Amino acid sequence: MSFPFEIYVIQATHGVVYGMLLFLVASGLTLVFGMMGVLNLAHASFYMLGAYFAYSVTLYSGNFWLSLLMSPLIVGTLGILVERFLLRKTYKIGHTAQLLLTFGIFFVFGEFVRIIWGTIPLSISVPTLFAGDIPFMGRTYPIYRFFILGFSLLLLVGVALMLMRTRIGIIIRAAVSDAEMVAALGTNVPIVFLGVFGGGAALAAIAGVIAAPFLSIYLGMGGDALLDCFVVIVVGGFGSLPGALIASLMIGELQSFGILWIPRLALVFQFLLMAIVLIIKPTGLFGEKE
Amino acid sequence: MSHLRGFQLGLGIAVAVVILLVPFLFPEIGIHLAVEVLIYALFAVSFNVLLGYCGMLPFGHAAFFGVGGYTVALILRNFPGTPLLLTFLMAALLALVIGASIGFFCVRLSGAYFSLISIASQMFLFAVALKWRSLTSGDDGMTFTRPELHLPILGGISMRSVVNIYYFTLIVVAVAILACYLFLKTPLGNSLVCIREKENRASFLGYNVFLTKLAAFLASSILGGLAGGLFSFFQAFVGPSFIDINMSMVVVVMTVIGGKRHFLGPVLGAAFYVVFQDWMSSLTNYWMIVLGITFIVIVLYAEGGLISLFENERVRLWVSRLKK
Image (cartoon, rainbow over all chains, first blue to last red; front, side, top):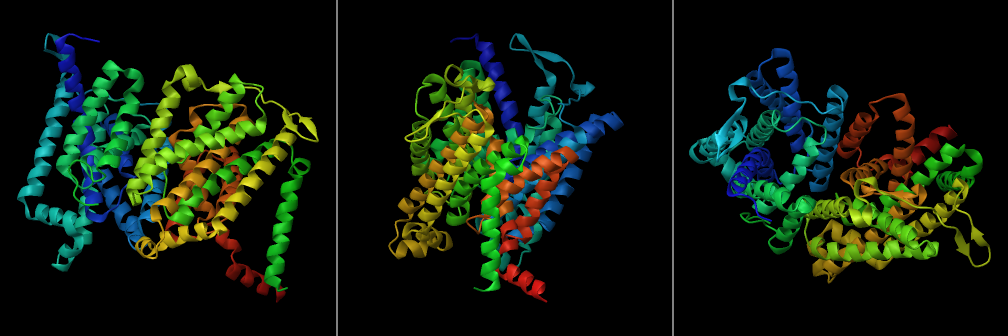
């Protein structure tokens, strides 16, 4: 099958946009796993809750930008509560209990959303500032997607600077590599972890808010994002942020071009990729720890 | 005989009598629920071989349920003359083959990695079931007619009435669960627990960790496939819902709520889930959230699950209180 060249460029841009959204969700997941070895299944609920809170805030205030501020705050607080009052109890019990607990939280949040917002997919309109299309490669392209691209790049740079250039960033990176040693050196690792957990939840919520006008808001969005995130952190390597970035972009492109070329198998590809990576290199492309 | 043994024996006999007499005690809808309980019980027991006995958490266990379900449906739809028991044998066999090809790669991975590859393989098979329309009819699923069961002496038994389906399911499930119990009582079964507790030590003692885990994975796949086959036979239908992520989640919930530390925990969990769902969903729209919160509470505070209510210590307490 061949398409005109600009279709490829547009499809590739779609892929990058989706990949960046995925990275915002997956980055928190991979950091949390790296620090505490917790695979937080509830993480994708934060993404979903972010989108739903954005819907409500936009509905009542009429202001999308307010929801971009409020929703991550609410969800980040929720994340902190979840870590402090539920997850923290399981560190002594073991990994299976952690997986089961976060699974239970995922389940409860899903039901919570169903009860409050119902099962009908919702949508919010694109903020007027970025409404409309602009010419791009001889066709038109929604401005809002460029906004997503720019905004998530900005966040990416912000997070990278925070991790690489600040004291707290050094502590987080050190804790990912060896949490016990960092604790032995006198850092209060549980507090740092609480912060990372809340921050990760807030990042996922931001992804949910900015995705809301462009994908619709529906009940299965958490589960869908969760599966994509699994693929991302497995392929990129558990605990590795650069790995998560590259894997997110890979999955974005894979889905984008998979739908273009072989729509019937688009769903199969990423799980095949994940299985292959797990079999050949279980640590992922950039992971170091087993 | 102590009061404790007497109590437990009495309870066991009462439950057995009720199970045998279900078609005479309950209206038709109740028999339907009972068949569901039986099938989910087998599915949850197969799941608990991995979760309870091996400490592995397969989040994609519906893969085998779906494989069994689709096998039965495809055989009965395309080759209506196939003997029923052969059909179920084929379902178990195909689940075994799929289980071997997944298990070979995933049982050597530990913790979250194992769970993830389990989900990945389930989603892969789900996508195949959804998209291979010429074979599986995709979204729509497939219906078929239930054939008669031919037995050597009794001749043909119609599978139209729910009572016959109930007894047929009961016998298959009872045999399968008994086989699973005996398997777990073998030295091989015991070595699973040994590996769960301390994998390194087990391997130093000379156990082949990989093969032992693989054996458990295969046993679990066969039973899961059988459960799926029975379910599709019971519904006379198979569809992607047999192999989707919800089915995988349901079995996790049933097993944990019932209690993963006891062989019969998942059976109790399955009964609880089906009855609770039927009862609560008619009362309130919020039953799933109640279930989810129960699940979280059990994970955090009561690892033994519901079955621990019948454990020796607690029963001894009740019995002694009754005596006073």
